[in-house]
Length: 65
Image 1 (cartoon, one colour):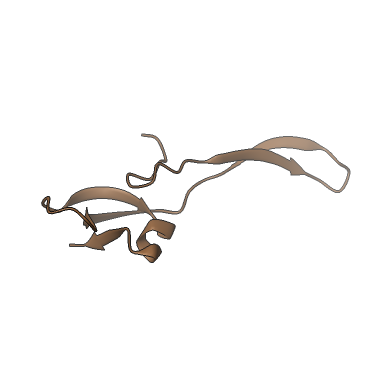
Image 2 (cartoon, rainbow, N blue to C red; image 1 turned 90 degrees about the horizontal axis):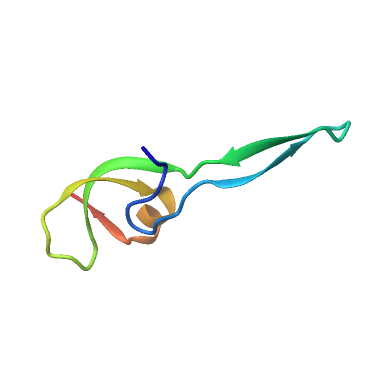
């Protein structure tokens, strides 16, 4: 299962860990997803389970059911 927001499509970002000795290793920053029963703000569809990032939840793009 991909770690992607069902509303905005935001996914993980990739980069490097860099130590004090400048050793470089790969890392990723995952999205802050919250599983919840909700519906889209401008939709009349019934509520269903979705994984929503905290940014969409905070900005009001989704309404909790």
